[in-house]
Image 1 (cartoon, rainbow, N blue to C red):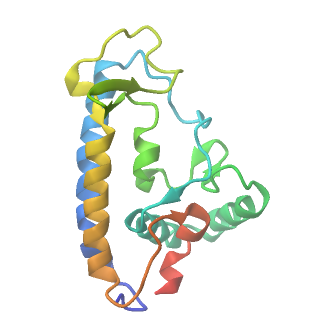
Image 2 (cartoon, rainbow, N blue to C red):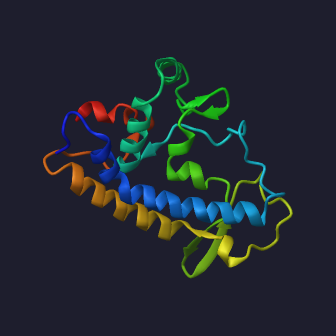
Amino acid sequence: MLQPQLGPKTTDAVLQNYRLLLERLNAHIQKVEAAFSDQIVCKKGCDACCRFLSLFPVEAFSISHAYSQLPENIKHQINHRLHHHKDACPLLIDHACALYPVRPIICRTHGFPIYIEKNNQVSIDFCPENFKQVITFPEHTLLSIERLNETLIAVNQLFLKSVTPHTHLPDRIPVSQALFILDEF
């Protein structure tokens, strides 16, 4: 079980695999951005996809840790949004994510080309505001959502083994609860 006071080494240790996954994902996204720099309209201020969502416990822990480091005035704004904007992500302040550097995987991948295999058929999905005149995508720019989810599930399972031998966390945690998950330890 986690100690009530988490030190930076403990936090870094339990989030190591997750942070490595984020590094790999960010490297992929940077390649896509370089290949399609004139086709991607997702920028600061574009928040149409920023909705209330739920997270894996490892993502919730990462978000909670980052939230605990925020200045009090930003925490106050987030708490206000939690109570007054039920459908929007509470981290969205002035059309920008207050925890952008530690945003969850779904927020990092939304809008970028992902492929899904089902019944031996491949479909590609991306934000309709992006890639408007793109007919095909080079294979290296596509992200297998299935492989990404499998990897995230494995990382989450390792995280759970390292922090919860005597505690049960739900499979998914709403952002509203994720912000305060460290308080439970």
